[in-house]
Structures are given as C-alpha cells and as structure tokens.
Length: 231
Picture 1 (cartoon, rainbow, N blue to C red):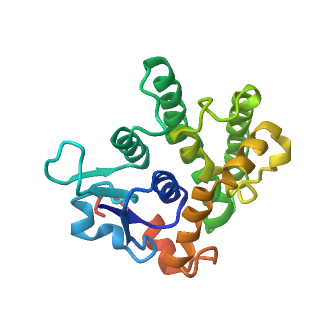
Picture 2: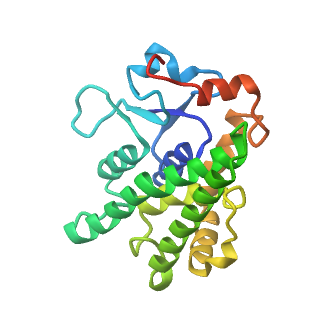
C-alpha cells in the first residue's frame, strides 16, 4: 500500500497518472494547501519543504520499513524503479528520459508556475512580469514541440518524462499559449489526454477538491503566497 499525500495540482497529477498506469494500490491523503495542511508536523516529517505531493511506501522493494519520498520528480523515479515501468534501464535511454524529467522540474514547471502567479493570482498586474513568463513558457513549449517532431513521446516510448510534463501543459490557456501553434506538442498532448489512466487520474481531483477550478479567496492566497522562512 502506498499513501499518497495529494492535492489536485499539476505536481499532484503526475503521481496519480503513474499510479493509475501501473495499478499499484494506493490511498489518497488530501493535503489542502489552501487551508494550510502542508504545515502540519506529521506532514512536514515526510515532506520538509511543505509541498505536496509526497508518498509513503509501506511495501518497499527491499522488504524493510516504510519509505517516504517527497518532490514529484523523485517520486516518479522511485515508483518507476519499484515497478520497472516507464523508465528505461539501459543507461543511454534512461538518461535520455531523466534529462527531460529534470527539464520539466527545473524549467517548465517553475516558469509556468510564475506565469500562473503573475497572470492570475498577483494582486497587482505587472506587465513586465506577465510578458516575461508568458514568453518564457512559450519558449519552453517550443523546445518540447521540436523534441516531439520525430518521436511519439518525449523519450520515444511513454515514460515518466511525459507524465511530468503533461500536467503543466493542461492549463495552456491560462498560460497564454495556443496549442495549435505547437503541432507536435498538440498531437502528443491529445494522445496522453486520451489514455485511460490519464482520464482516471484527472477524475480524482474534483472528488478531493469539489471547488477545483474556482477562484481562491484572500485567506487562501495568504497561505499559499505569504510564506517566509518562519513558516
């Protein structure tokens, strides 16, 4: 059994996509980030960066005590190694996938996240910041589009690199991007969207958060965007 500490965000969706693909038994433990659940001591013991998702695997491959993992990219790698799925073992192919996983973690996710913040959530609309992150998001879409010009998926075969990137493309309209401007990416996006495991993964979100997709209130903004080193 795997405990999945989850809220329906792009990073949360990555893990449910994987788990639904492989059929591992898991239990969702909601972490309502708008209410501050991420600061609970019992969650911080698993995820010291006070960010979800995180997992606890009660049946690790070595048969030992439960293993906890935080950071969505690390979770995908852990689950891939545990199941032998969606991450090649041959070194060249493995690092081909891993470099794109890290590309998402270090580039697409953070830049799209800043795009969302300044375009949607910031109390003051700063044209320079909005333009900066919309353009950078578009540049990254272009990088991915070119990568997909001669292959079905990012690493050739469907992998954790695709699962990591896809959820950050889902809100493309909020990011000021038109998928028709990126035909190879659009083809890839539609193929992943139609996978039964992806459909199941995205059905979990509204069950966990019935207000999914609705504007967040000022109290939630203070919790999400007002953190300092003291919390």
